[in-house]
Amino acid sequence: MPAFDEIRTLVPHQPPMLLVDEILSADPADSRVKSVVGPEHLFLRQDGTLAPEAFCEIIAQSFAACEAQRRRLAGLSTEGGGYLANVREFEVFSYARANDELITHVVQKDDFMGTRIVSGEVRRGSETLAAGTVYIFMWEGNTPPEAK
Image 1 (cartoon, rainbow, N blue to C red):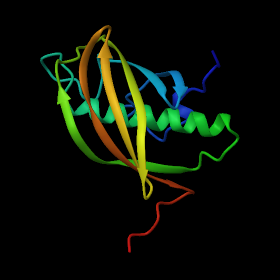
Image 2: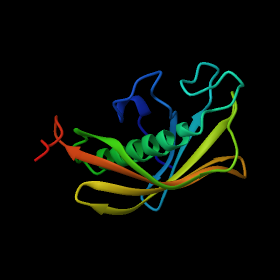
Image 3: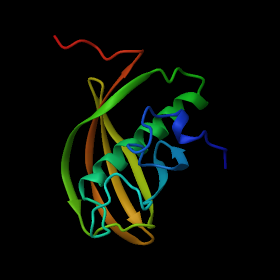
């Protein structure tokens, strides 16, 4: 198993917005990322559960980190960026709680004009907590393309 780069070197997010911790697998067909819901997690609610919208961002950051890792391992530039543009067919089945270890599985399903269509699933052990499709607009270089 290859040694993966530290997540902070792969995505622009910094705490408290950095929601993913470690790449477990960066294979395009099987990318997995670990996240731990710490007691100071940005999306942790007063009742001790993770706000459901956090799952969408965890999936997006998981994909971004794995994509950057794949590019780096291939000797390609990792300059660029992206943002979560849309969420479709997303379901939350159960809540995560403080101290939970989550494993996110992401697979790119398509690329339409710079927008990556990514299927994602967040699990705690064998339990699926959330699953759906996110659309991530990505660009290469220092700045996003101008809107026309």
